[in-house]
Length: 507
Image (cartoon, rainbow, N blue to C red; front, side, top):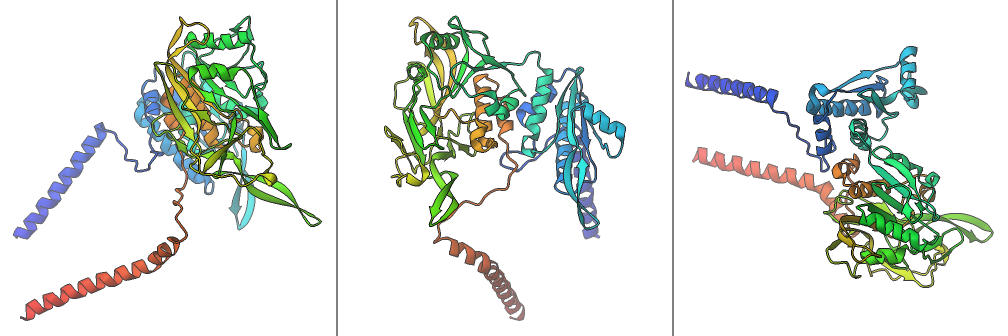
């Protein structure tokens, strides 16, 4: 009777605990995300954006139902992400899924919003078929709308959604200006970067007229100039900084051409101006054992063969400052003939210089006479690294032309590679890390750091860390024999315990 009563009490207490948890859950909302980068939870910037809505945001999702994997998983993840937004936004955030299917009116509606059908491969009746599907959405707010035509990159889903909402709800978009007139990279060569920048900024081309910038953007970018800067243009840039402007410079200190196999030092006039601020780009090229692959043609006998070889002039940076918001969540950035930055150079009083990206320990530099042809390159003596490839400076930046002027709380970023976002040099496919790096750079300069943590989220399988060849056999046999040995040990322990218990009972 006592045992029965104890059981009833335990069940009653369990029921009361469940009721209490449900009551708490009605008033307290939280999610538990155990992934390293919290890829399944909204970032702080997204939460603050939907909580601060003045008017309702409506999301129309045009997504074909009953699609096979992986598209069905994309639909489920998209719904889960929108549920997160609605949980924090309440009645100010609403969404609904629409399946255009064979409904011609819904297909026309999607087309009006700029959502096209895309072709996907499906298996029906044991046959591989091509099917038109819709996988886009439109965000509406206050009579305005932003369209995401295709939800393809799940890692960028939250960034795209939050960017669209912020763009619709802002009274004024900040202006990002790209300097022209000195042989800078054209828009056609960095179309991916340009379009990504337009999500959160009004992008303008800026030139110098009568020793002043013809427009004063919130952030000014100088990307890969090849011509020299006249003195009035340098003064205009200095004046822009002294008046509170924010400047990002991606500069080639060495002009290199892989196709023709030559390289020479490049002087634009910006070098001395940046050196005055504390950013000295050396006239060298960094070689790194951790590098990209290039394809070369070799002659073997009477045959011409294509061979992929590691090319140390294209370093892959994987070491970044762990505290700086521009780079602390990046995994890798691909460089194209990058020069090192001298961090031993003097820094003006009141200015802090932070190295952002480094080459690997197994790296060195080449300067003076450059030998860049892949098949004629001697084996470099790696081991002098790491070298600094990008720096950020902030603080009281003094004018280079007027000793009485100082820019308070100035921000400046300098990168020793002007081709970082030139997608034509990356076979038309800009590396995601490069794009994230430069967009983070712009956000930090514009002090819009809320989006930095969202942009660099990554939904990707974890890669096992590499181990030495001598350790691999031990790991292999441990995986094979370990479970067997463990089962035998557990069996021996249980047998020993049962034998001792039997001996006690029979004593």
